[in-house]
Length: 125
View: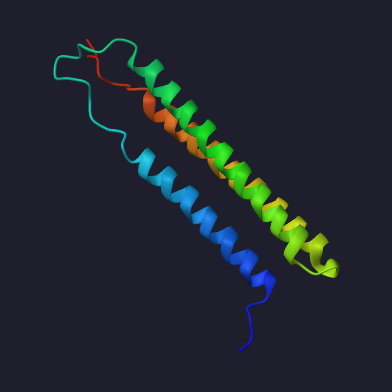
C-alpha cells in the first residue's frame, strides 16, 4: 500500500482549514437580520450600528488570526514534509492561497459592515 504523497496531504490540510474558516464566516454572517427596526421607526437600542460594526471588526480580527495560524501551519508543512525540489512551489502556492483567503475575509468584513447600516426605516414625508 502506498502512502499519500506529502503534496496531497498538504493540499488536503489546506482545503480543510479553508473550509473551516469559511464555514465559521458563513455561520457568523448568517446571524444578521434583514428586517426593519420597528413599525414606527423608533429604535429602543442605542448605538446599534456602532455595536454591529464593532462585532464585524472583532470577527474579522479573529478570523484573520485563524487564517494566519493556518498559513503558518501550511508553511511548516511545506518546509518539513515536501521534498527540497518542490518547496518553492509549495510555498508559492500557499502564499497565493493565503492572499486569496485574506481577500475573501476582507470582502466578508465589508459585507458585514454594510449590513449594519439600516437604511429606509424612516418615512418619506
